[in-house]
Image 1: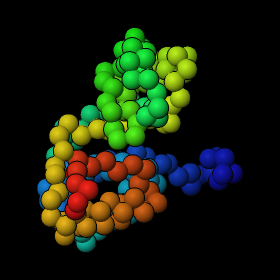
Image 2 (image 1 turned 30 degrees about the horizontal axis):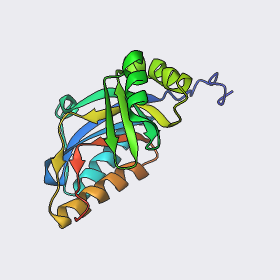
Image 3 (image 1 turned 60 degrees about the vertical axis):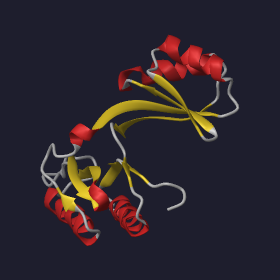
Length: 174
């Protein structure tokens, strides 16, 4: 009865969003799915505190992110053909990233863009609706970079956390 949800002690899962700042003034947005809001809030707060971060108020960093559809296409694809197919399907941007292309769209257009690229014979490595930062914070100090990575790891290891988004950029040399 409990497994089917018919039990009187039915547990309701809810989505909770936590916002805060990590080391180096890095904005962090955490999406969690939990059956115990208090436990998850305490765990997320502890991860921020142990890693020189601060949990913020609702809305404190959400404005720094926007929901987008993102598709990754292998770098062997023809750039002109990719741009034409993506633009015809309603994609907003096509960017070259090292060995691949990143195609961004409105989240509601993600399916249509993916279908158009597949129809054009373009192989897609991955596609997802995600939160992209509007601006990035460059983390130049190695010690701060280590703290940021530790914070991200601590948050991602929490079993209630579904997604973690941040606006940091750590250069290769660091």
